[in-house]
Image: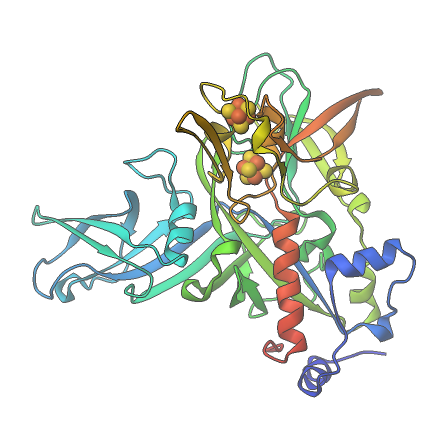
Length: 426
Ligand code: SF4
Ligand code: SF4
């Protein structure tokens, strides 16, 4: 039996579509009561993690028409953006492209991902334009005033990641760890949401084709095609959506040892058109291989593990938090190293205050490793690596993907399909 997109759209319209989130679907496989091909029309898959290829295209009004001819440079909250491609400066506005990995010239801990989040939260941002005439124009704006704000992800939802350990004798700075990763070969950092990743569930891209509808950070968007460096073995996607319709919960900044990064959340519905597509959906974390490499140089392949070791049985929630345990270190290692700036530590009226912003927290695990007072507890688990026949047990100290956020966006998509507001377009 085969289904068509028209069949599924009709069921969505009639309110009798059978849709599962990938997490629920995988859970049912583990419980031995997986719905049969006949019982499932759509499975929503998704991922959330650092996606360095994220950029936004803006058109920003900066002055009265005729006040300058050409912009040379533009900074948004201190982050440099590329002027262009269209010239509209005589009309008083500037087109520009800004990267999620861009870093502020005024604050080394602030970058493009944080800027996108601030804009979506309705905050005003500072705009500075240097003109070819030698003028500097300063103004403020916000997402309501920005005329166009569109996001393009040039490398999203990557299927094949690598996990990293440090086998050397020196700490190493890298985008794969929130701080310099210490030597000692006792920690591992990884990315990827494993068995719920869209490309893991449609590895040959039978349905994730150019023009397929998606949710990018909560905004309905499209697959533009393959992302940069995408290959048959290691595919990723180029995605696009209206930034103004995004939800700040799904996108934000993430500091790494090499500077600011940006995380995104993506959900893609897999229409179960035939048994082949259904069979691809049966993949589980333990079936998904994960290479382990040395963080120094990135390409030195040490061994292999799988996503079962990374996610199965571990806590995907936010850390348990007990402010009363804080011993008031001179420098709070958590405030210093939390990649999403979710922790504030201060002394007020001789009292130690520690605040955790659960909404901004990524569940990465850095705080539970580095807090000396056990204020933060999160069971991210251990992984056993087999290297040349010897077992090495390493602590999963840095998760650069967030299955909790990924679950939110794939459930959001389930709701939209069930209420008829999201249909397939091809
Ligand atoms: S590292 Fe932990 S114990 Fe030390 S100041 Fe920070 S929260 Fe308190
Ligand atoms: S898990 Fe801890 S270190 Fe990681 S984002 Fe949350 S508060 Fe920050």
